[in-house]
Picture (cartoon, rainbow, N blue to C red):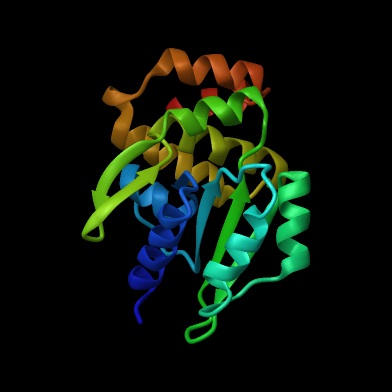
Length: 183
């Protein structure tokens, strides 16, 4: 099974559970900026607080993937991340629980439906990918995150909503980093 087939399997499973998602991370950067290799996939998912939601995730993924019940429950409670590890290939997929914060809700609402890998995939917008990468750069100081944001900026420059970018860069205290993108 290829990495792409595994990703499609995960997306189809999320769709079957009616759980909204958005692709993010290195693969999503490739849709908007300069492609780079990545060793995992990242998704933001919206998990309802209804009873049984975690049991459904365990059931649908438990056959083909390693999934920690404790890790899943903790991620849902604290709005953090849990992983799936494909038994056959070892491919890791990080599933980030959508946070109930203004920026996260707005970014998730702006996700785009793109045609890729022979199917339709929801992906965070170019602007939100840039903001996320700048936030990761701020907390980690890893140059790859800044380079990802800069690559999106350079490829998408004429299509970006610069007012949206500036608004959230100011609100999220990353404006100084954001200003370096054009330089």
